[in-house]
Length: 181
Image (cartoon, rainbow, N blue to C red; front, side, top):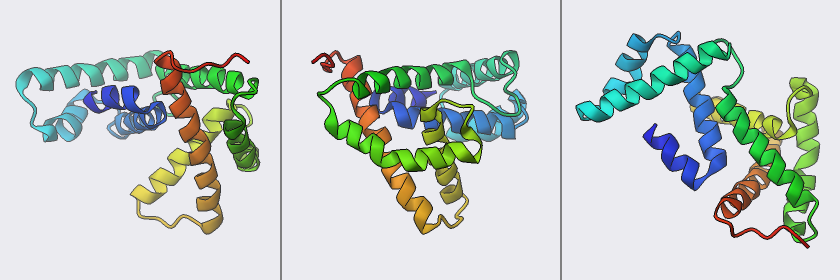
C-alpha cells in the first residue's frame, strides 16, 4: 500500500506492474488473509496502526478480486482503469503533431507489440500487451531465468515507449501537457 501510493505518484507504469505483482502475490497465498498477513504483512514489522492499515488494504484487494472474479487470472478493474487512462493519453499523443519523438518510439516498438499480440494477446488492449511483455520479463529475471537477446532488445524498445508514455502521463496529471496543435 505504501509502495503503491509512492509509485502511483512517481511512475504510473511502475505502479501498474507493482499492482500486477500484488495480484499475483494474493493469488499465491490463495486469497487467504491469514496467509497474506503472515507471509506478506508481518515481515515488515510495522507499528500496530500501520500493520492494521496494510492488512485492511490487502483484505480490500482480496474482496475486490473475489467480486470481480479474478481469483485465478486477470486484473482488477482499478488496474484496468490505468490501462484505459494510458490508452486515452496514448491516442491523444498519437493524434498530436507536437510529439514526433513519442510517435517514433511507438512505431519502433510496434513490431514487438504485434508479436506479443500474435502470441495470444489479440483480445487485450495494445498497451496491456506492452505491460504483459514487461511483466513477463520482470518475472523471468526475478526467477533468475535467462532472457533471450532478441526478447531483451524488444523489451528495451517497449520500455522506452512505455517510459515516455508514463512521463507524459505525469505531465498530463500535473496540467503541464499541451496536446493541442
